[in-house]
Amino acid sequence: MAVRAVRGAVQLERDETTEMHERVGELLTALLERNGLAADDLISVWFTATPDLRCDFPAAAARKIGIIDVPLICVQELDIAGAMPRVVRILAHVETDLSKAAIAHVYLGAAAALRKDIAQ
Image 1 (cartoon, one colour):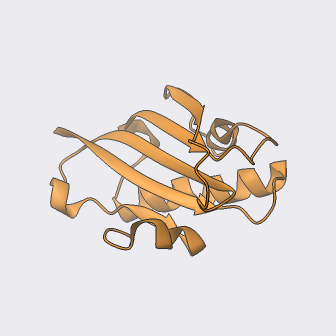
Image 2 (cartoon, rainbow, N blue to C red):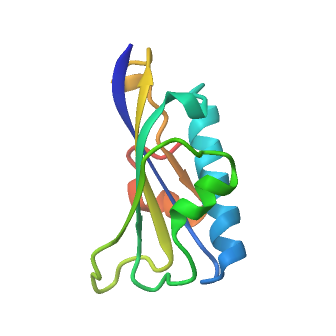
Image 3 (spheres, one colour):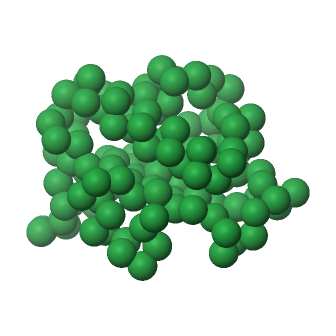
């Protein structure tokens, strides 16, 4: 079993708690499903949020969908002029038998434009 990193991102339509929980929950669920993972396979998850997102911590969405005993941390993304607004990014460390090349990184909706090279 190897430790792998899985990336993902989603853009929120609004800076609202319900929107944060729904979109981040959707992203985490897709990340797990596309890689054949369960919550028990998660080692840790880093969340970044652009400075314009202030409604809630992205990690609260993970707790809401049952990711309870996994270390989570939230940090603020750099405030770069011209960057896509209202984006939550994820870097998850997982235990898996998948090779690096087989990992499915998940960029949902408009966030797919952030990494056209690896977006699924």
